[in-house]
Amino acid sequence: MTSVLRELPLLYAVLSEGRLCGSASAVHEPSPAGPLTAPHRSRPPNLPPAPRHPRRSRQSSTSRVRLYLKPGQKGTKQLLAQYGDRLICVRYRYHAQRKKRLKTVELLVAERDWQPPRPRFAHDQIVGLRVAFADVAVRDRVKQAGGTWNPERRVWQLRYDRAVALGLNGRIGRRTRIQQ
Image (cartoon, rainbow, N blue to C red):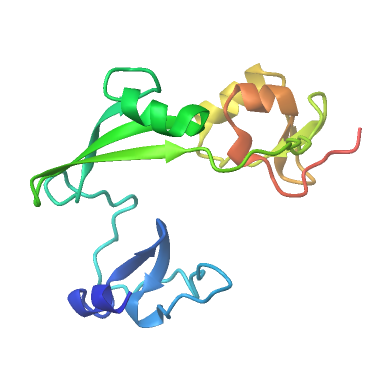
């Protein structure tokens, strides 16, 4: 982390594990407990806006996967004989700067029973959706799906299965279970 900070201006936005963590002056060394959260989201007004989703350019990336093979395909036979049913896939990565081709394998190391978590809401449960006033297109889609406006809670009410069908899962409020 410190090598990145030396290369960046002091008030440049810093990304940690794909999440915006504030300015470089607010970044601390990672703790064993887990990734840090941003102490604040405000930016100095004189800085240009930070890119929303910064991506590496193709030239600067270290290696790229060009080939993904399933067990049994040509190029995986020896690895399949070596690892057997534990082999999940074989990837060929190409490192442009080092001019190397890297063969990587994905192995199954443990397997155990797992129960998927219960859904947050029943399919017929009425939930509250946050829709901005200016977001007319989404509001119209909610209305067409049978949604109604709740002025007390300031949310649109719609059945959970219809909200999922419209792709509005992210707009469901935290405590939006509506009493019927």
